[in-house]
Image (cartoon, rainbow, N blue to C red; front, side, top):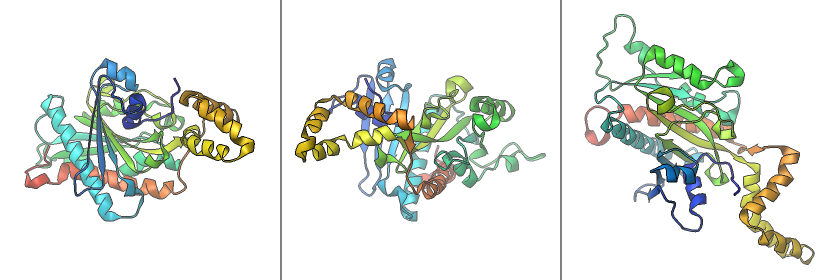
Amino acid sequence: MFEIRTDLAVEEKESAAGDGGGVRGVSLREWRRADSAIKMTEVVVLNETGAKAMGKPKGTYLTMEARRMGRQDKDYHREVSQELASQLRRMIRTLRGRHILPAEDPLRVLVVGLGNPSVTPDALGPGVLGNLRVNRKLREAAGAPRKTDEPVILSGIVPGVMAQTGMETAEIVGGILHETEPDLIIAIDALAARSIRRLGTTVQLTDTGIQPGSGVGNHRHSLTLESLGIPVLAIGVPTVVGAAAIVHDTISAMIGALWSRMETKNMGDYMDGLAPDEQYELISELLEPEFGQLYVTPPDIDQTVKRLSFTISEGIHLAFYENPQEEGGCGI
């Protein structure tokens, strides 16, 4: 069976479910508040059967689809930040309920900005760290009291990529954990999507950790609870899509165009008779010898990454510092 590259669980669910069917071992919940333009989708991989069908580990994958996120609309981006903060707080409450995180504040959080700051589609993680208000140095300076009224002790790192450092990201993060002993990691990374309409408009939040470099199919050592010993929440936004996937999305339109002319009607009949996996295999055979594993990104990706970096950093800030519904502390 063919596989179009994607890091989004919602797209894997759409593919695995086929024409409206369900997937064993996977639950799906969708909602949208009446006053919100953000569509929420929660995919939960419940067991090994679901993990095998989805090609993803067990856990919760929350997707926020915000179609206007590419625009310079401060109010809309504020809404996205608030929704992200709300979902971060919910996941942290769940981890505390499972006694994976300490029940009392301050929570010691390490934010890891994955990616290469010199490559714009891969610079989301470093961009978020550039906007983050870290406070660990102030809270743990020499002579400062260990007890603080603040809900979070926040630190951050941009570990770079292996081509720059010669080290796996997991090795760098592991060394930092040994020295700073955080309770939780929040990892930020750029992802790959199957559909071009989700580029820069979709945020995925998951409690399963992350594979550095997964956005371009370059899997490295994972950052997970199992590999690091502390929980890892991952925030990702798709910034690239495979060229073959774009062509595959246009197959129906191409078949219609072929049918419209007598001299190409037979070719239209041939393409229409191919199964989806055969269509994708044909496209890959035509593209890859000429272009290799080609990934495409929007022309305004620099502005998109800049806006998204700020939006995600504000979501992290609000998760810990905003009082939701007038509750005390950070609401987690």
